[in-house]
View 1 (cartoon, helix red, strand yellow):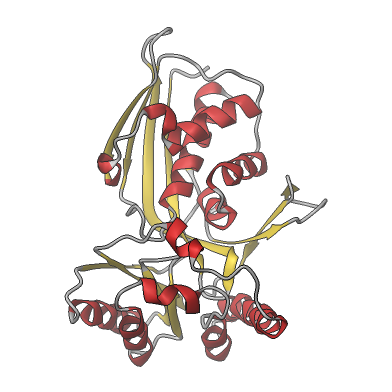
View 2: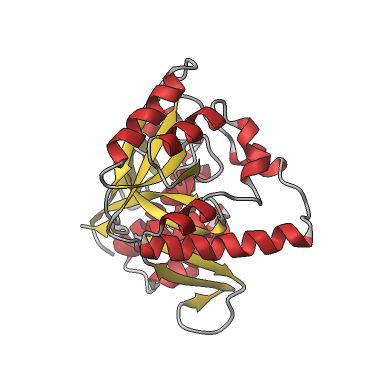
Length: 311
């Protein structure tokens, strides 16, 4: 067992319109964990800072420790005693930027590094998805870049536990523009508004637009991106939960974005634009939200972000 380990894991944006529950992209917001053995028989200690400072639950219930514990048990080991986890994050919580998935991945990767566990990345991603429930957020936190997750992938390269993970292309001309409001949206609430079934015709349209999204991201094609970012499965039911959704997405498109939609289930909104139009899109999204009294933070992802890092 190592004496210490330091891990950095990115957040993510999922769905991206028609990539509902299957497409995720790593973003330049990170959770950082420094782990060490403090005393052989001591209790677990979790020290939170940054965006995590508002969390007050016991360490054993924290998603970070749940990832740590599950990784140990998956490798046939008991979680070690006397572990101190110092965790900080700049991933906003409850804003659709994958904070929960990043925390679980950070815990699992920390356990593997600290305890020298015999688990590969696919095994880690699969167990983290089982804990957190959103494999499309977990995958980019593990591998970085743009990832496609296929549920029930079956046997084959990269498949395990019914999940198939595979990277997708992001054209070098594309920029993701994020507008993060000062209010949260619980995933449970966003899930609750979704219908249990959809008409066959809607499913056909959704499948076509999902394919358009993947090709649009790879080619930087304006028409395909416009179609792929215009979802019919989840956004129509969730848009009313995000104050200013229509105003902000319309402002993004008017400023030159190929399209704009929810990041995850919200409350963050994300637009896809060319590099030359991205600054104007960012300013327009911020102005639209401020115009209705919402405080907003913005940032851009101009190139694929790497997956987790261990030092």
